[in-house]
Amino acid sequence: MRDRALMDMAAQAGEIMLVSGAEIYRVEDTVARILRASGASEADVVVMATGIFITLASGEEESLSAVRRVRERSTNMNRVCRVNDVSRNFCTGSISLEEARDALREISHEIQYSRRMRILGYTLTPAAFAVMFGGGIMEVAAAAVVGTVMALFEILINRVRLNDFCSNAAEAFIAGILSIVFRAAFFPMLNLNANAVIISALMPLVPGVSFTSAIRDTLNGDYGSGIARIMEAIVVALAVASGVGASMMLGSMLGGVL
Image 1 (spheres, rainbow, N blue to C red):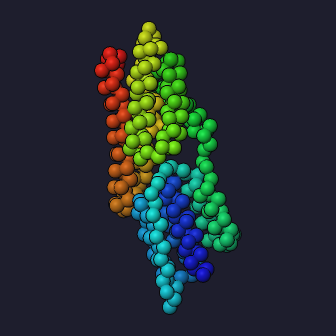
Image 2 (image 1 turned 180 degrees about the horizontal axis):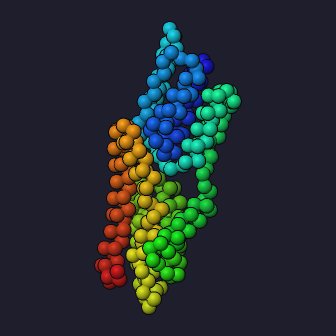
Image 3 (image 1 turned 30 degrees about the vertical axis):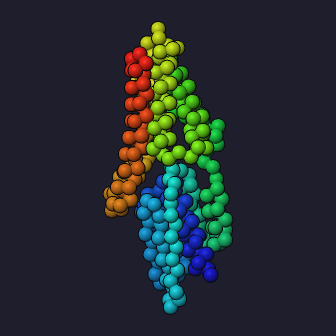
């Protein structure tokens, strides 16, 4: 029974890390270290971008297996660090199996950022990038407003439960069309740089961390997971490009304000 509980705890730790955007080798190493604490004669761990496969054998007893399917992925480095801390403390004997399971359960239910913090992040990030892209006060203000609207729109999309491609494309479309509307309706005499506003507003959608993790997985020899994550990043980029392109086409059809 203890081996089963230990394997379930290891699988939970790996699942949390994989869902949170950890590299494949890091997930495998963490799960393997936890399983070694059982003293089993053989422990095999295979992690892919969409699932975890674990086999635990101890002497003449029947082998135990566990499979965890991972359907959603995000970026939450805080969760990854916390799971690593739980793993280290468990392997050194600082915490018991029950304490480790309780800690992992708490980590899995935590919310990284509140709704207000997400809205604030969506507001300040485009505003900061607008400065980097050569925008003035008007571009910064417009980018901040567009980012706020995108955050509110994301909350609505999450309730509808659209897939990643459609949600990213819709947010990019909102960013593009709002920038065009601002230039046409509110800042026609101030020569607002709509391109800078659009690019700044899109920065929260750029899959930079996913692409970096994909490269690291590929360099570590996890080619299947690396290719899967690269394709995921490419799909997000295509969705963003499609949404912005649609907004620019609509703006041109309505008067060519760009």
